[in-house]
Image (cartoon, rainbow, N blue to C red):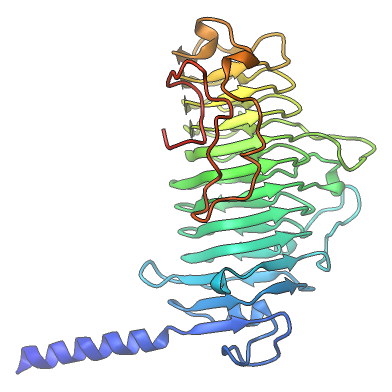
Length: 392
């Protein structure tokens, strides 16, 4: 009887836990209590009401908050809290009405105002299929771990499109598109497509992302002291003054992978492309770590393809071709290089099946991935350089 009673209590407990999880609805025209027939009109109201296991559904339309949306509570590993568009409806969150869009030149942006979504000390959240525009950052996550971000678009923000910072670990960002982000406060000095900066934390991953036409760099890992894994990330067109800033300070690198003052960070960079950026393709930027850099391609950038002047990194099976710098690569002697394009033979546009990136720039597939193409695939069929065709 005791065992039967125990089983009964477990079953009741499970049912109670299941009942606690709820669906919360928000609509740009809502004014209700968060049900499907009477949705909230405020995303913040839904976030405040959510507890572990809940799902927040955003209905189609454009949301125009006047204060940014603060995430301060946490889910659990077993019961994360989810924010997503309802049935893949198009949801746009426009931060133009927030403070700091923009502040004046050199005026400080307070921490609490950073991001349309400001995710601080909030763990075990999941975000799907949202577009964030015109904010002081799109996503800004600080001291936030075990979060998952899928199919987000962050563009035309007044700072970096998507930024992780502080003590942040085990975050996965997949199928991100982040573009045309700019920072008038700093004349282009700091707005990147994606950044993981000024902190530490194991297990952060960016995968199958596109970072283009941002004012500073495509990607920046400034002062982040733990390994970040980058796979199938494509950065192009970054670092050009498209906004007419009078004293332009954009750097224009595809991938900026650290800085000297930080502890060594052994980032992993695989199957990534940097092309048509204003300056360098890939740069260790003073990171003294041992980075793993495999099967990447730097093509047609405004300076060298790979600039590794501070690290003891391993570069294997990479391509640097048609970059404008006096040399395709600039490597310190502690870098271990093997089977790379610059170590045998000459490379030109005719070395590739295609130098047309138009397919890569098309809409994502229904599974979230970028469309596959022959862009920058070697004609020889050699297993060298990045490809959109399949995982390598």
